[in-house]
Image 1 (cartoon, one colour):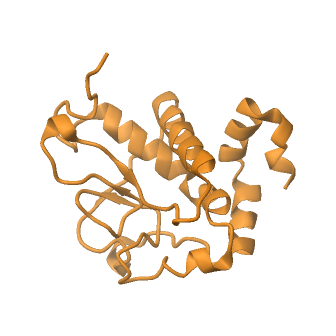
Image 2 (cartoon, rainbow, N blue to C red):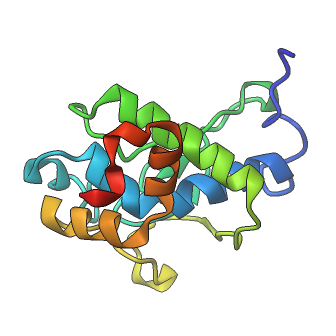
Image 3 (cartoon, rainbow, N blue to C red):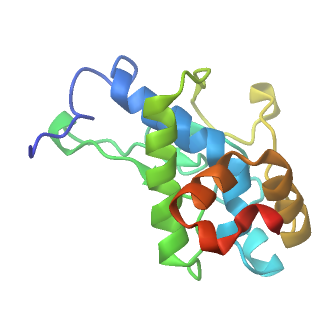
Length: 161
């Protein structure tokens, strides 16, 4: 209790940190629908805006979804950079916690760390939805995040749209 499990080892060799990153990123595309309620929320998801544009993670990198700021290992943390300023805090926190659970309890393919700009075509990363309608379609089709919502909040009937 009181120990920072992300502080152990290096960023690249910390198994718990890698699983958490993979879990959050695996739910990332679906989460955009719950975090970005208006089409204007998508305006910042463009290259060269210092905001994420695709499912990615990196160190001190503001172009990635998950940013691990430079710090002493004992202060290591993750930043989840999708939610806009007007995002519902409930959904923001829920998505992070669901992603942590998802990553720790499933064998997910590891994601490569991004060095430089995540929007660089050399990474060949899938771009985020560009509108609320596109995000809704992704949310309704993917179903991984909806499973967590249905499990913990069955009265919301998330998977029914």
